[in-house]
Image (cartoon, rainbow, N blue to C red; front, side):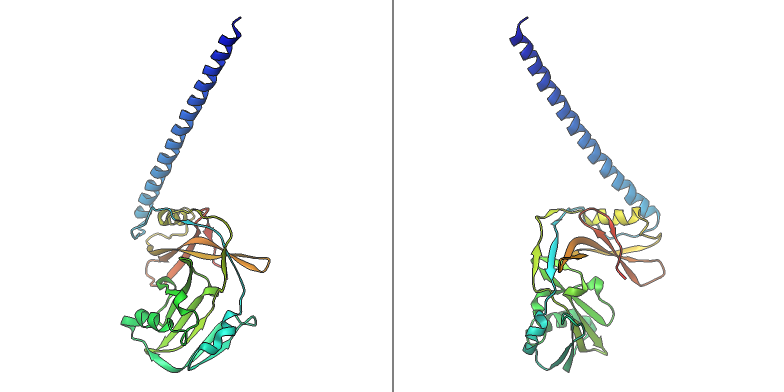
Length: 265
């Protein structure tokens, strides 16, 4: 028997089998993608049939990863930089500072965000104020919340925000927390889209009939405490308004694995 001929036959069969398996895998991937796309389209249709109103939802998939920070008394060490204020710390670890203004500041509702944004950029008014940006979804009628932005990443967590209290058109006080150091734990991965997050909420029965999805925002949220550090993950925050109510409930979806995150009590 011609062994070279047998080897050639086996080689041809082996290459052909690999090509076949490769084509089958590619076709299965295409089917999976089509099924996923079709499934999402059907779910969106179901959402609309349940009279749930949606804003324009992005299908873009951003990137993100895990962050970690350690508790810091940075505010306490720099508090002398503030002028005409009476700051006090309401946490034993000196991480939560509430400051009452000596002279109140006029804040008109129509231009409140612009006024406060300009005011907090001065180090004499707010420590590290330029590192915070306004978060409309977290704010209320008389309170304006600014969240810390680190390396282009928003952090929606009580440990990294400023809440301004406005009464009768006057800024009287504010509460601040600050993360002095934030480290990236691992390389960024592809995250789910805003549309994926809303679909996840619907699948998990987190969107009642006749509700309205007011807004979506990608930001980092608390995950756990480990070895003296706090770990944050990227999540989609979704503002949901129930029928007949002007109150907006904030839902959260883990942007890495598309699971609903329950709000801590």
